[in-house]
Amino acid sequence: MVRSTVAFLGPKGSFTEAAARALFPNETHVPFRSIPDCMDAVNESNVDCAVVPLENAIEGSVNITLDYLIHHQRMEMVGEVTAPINQNLLVKKEDATAWKDVKKVYSHPQAIAQCHQFLREHLPNAEISYTNSTAEAARLVSELDGETVAAIANDISAQEYGLDIAQADINDYENNQTRFIVLKKGSLAEEDSSEKKELTYKTTLMITLPTDFSGALHQVLSAFAWRKINLSKIESRPRKTGLGNYFFIIDADMKLDKVLIPGVCEELKALGCTVEILGSYPCYEWETLCSVTK
Image (cartoon, rainbow, N blue to C red; front, side):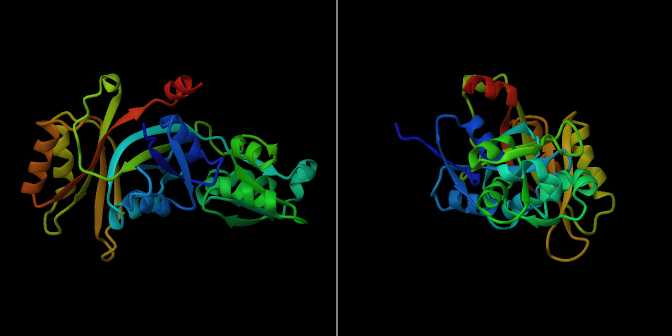
């Protein structure tokens, strides 16, 4: 049997790799330098699917994922998992007792933002340098000589690159989580797998409002409300065609069916909205996935 290949935001040791391995424990995992690179690899059929971060509980949506998916590399959302995120300050072993002397901190912009208060309190004079992933930051710190530097990353990266955890759990808020999405080429397909019957589902829609329709957003939400469809997320994103031009990303807490979601789509189109379904997919539980892979 040919194994599938799964792209993830690398290098090795990233949070995204952990999510990819939890979702696809028996597949081949391939690291890529950036989120767009992961998505390009799927589009070019170099890999079968990609796992990329979509949303963080503290910092909100990962804009590069949404924008690249919408404007450049359209593909289907086919699964998701929400993983706990614990950020740590990692240093070289020789700097373990002198971490307060760190002159530069490397990490992904979202990780830096998640640890803003820690950095402000403990390393206020440290220069911040952004990387494509937390794992890349850890690898970079491990390779730098003669500098007192640190990375913000997970404990897997510490082990992978031989770094010490100078300070653990430095994110500013508890219950830090990131939602990871699986992307794949293709059109929406029926899922009949019996093992997925107990899973919850989401359907993600992209809706553009008509410009000359007063109260259009209220009408959009009403189309879901009277059908008793719960919405777990509503977000506006710029259409990149001028100020004031937006589309909305909406997550409905149900699987794409043959009545309710199609009814919503037809009602919205009748109002002059454009509607696209970006995916209807199972939502896996992190604890369940981890218990299976242990």
